[in-house]
View (tube, rainbow, N blue to C red):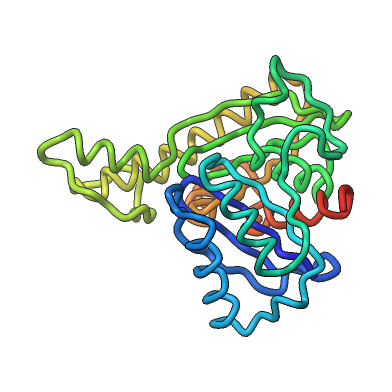
Length: 254
């Protein structure tokens, strides 16, 4: 069994994976200021709470978009499980060819999402990760990462909207009954959900037009389950996509 760790700007997702099967997942809040000892204590408490045997891990693999958290967390994991923790980064075998201006700038979550999507769903594929930021990226038929787009995440956008206006409240991101809403909160929810869904549909159309062929569409991230059902395009929703990608990279690089 391995421990897969995906460090996002808002949350850290941990998965216990055995022979490719994700047996347990845990989500905790990201703390970019935490020390190695603080991460070790938090992880030890989680393992004990969920009855996870630390000695059962043969290793770990970590992807992080929060540089300040990467090394303290890696060291904490290695001390707890007594085995090596791989970090997704340059030089790792991925099977993905980078066709962008500076491959070294591609964040780990984009790599693991792309690897998982092309392995599980084939190519060409467009990967949509709906989190603190919304990322939409294209992998072509030849398994080349062609680039894509980055947008502000839904919660981030609407928190900024509430903070920057006098009359608009903070809202939960849930679909209203109809697009043409009749009160302030539902109007905001309409924009958040149907507006984001229309953006995903439209961006997929534009990327396919530039590529010259249709693509499989795969979405993941904390808000994918709320947004994807409101899209008009057929989009596969896979909440475990990034953990699957970490397992694939572990197998390629262990």
